[in-house]
Structures are given as C-alpha cells and as structure tokens.
Length: 92
Image (cartoon, rainbow, N blue to C red; front, top):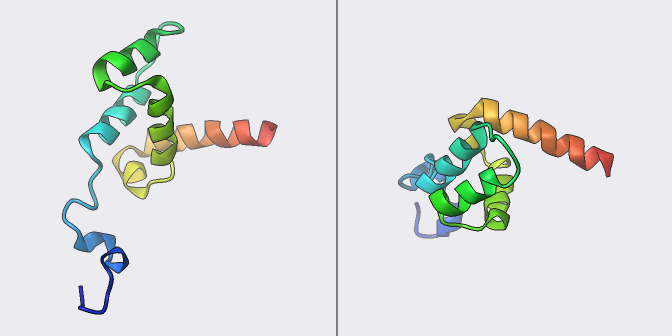
C-alpha cells in the first residue's frame, strides 16, 4: 500500500487472510450442505452449534451468497442457493 492509498483501497489480496472465509462462514455453508429431517431441526442446530439465532444465520447466509470467497469455497452449495434465491425473487 502506498502512503496516499487508503486501507480500503488496497487489493483484497494484500490483506492477510482476505481470501479465506472465517470459521463461522465455513460453518454456515456446511450447515446449509446438510439435509434436515423436519421443521425446526435446522433452526435448533443453528442455535446449538453456531450459537446464533436463525434470523442472524439467514442474514449471514444471504451475504455469503454474494461473496466470491464463498463461491470459491463451496460452488455447488452457493450456486444452488443462488438459484433458489433468484427463483423466490422472480415470484414476487
């Protein structure tokens, strides 16, 4: 980074760990890869395993769908969820 360049103007590759997802982000994607036997089971697992509310989980998940790092980490899951999201948006 040059002296006249603000930190936010750095290339993402210049920051340590910028190309990697956080442990929580990887756990969210892993949770989404699983199949769930019935209603409420997934929400309970989100609370117990991730320690966050289901609402926060879905906020994080939605943000991950637009993150290139998530796509690189798990392209099958991210692309599937993008298709589902796009289909829901087009029905509105």
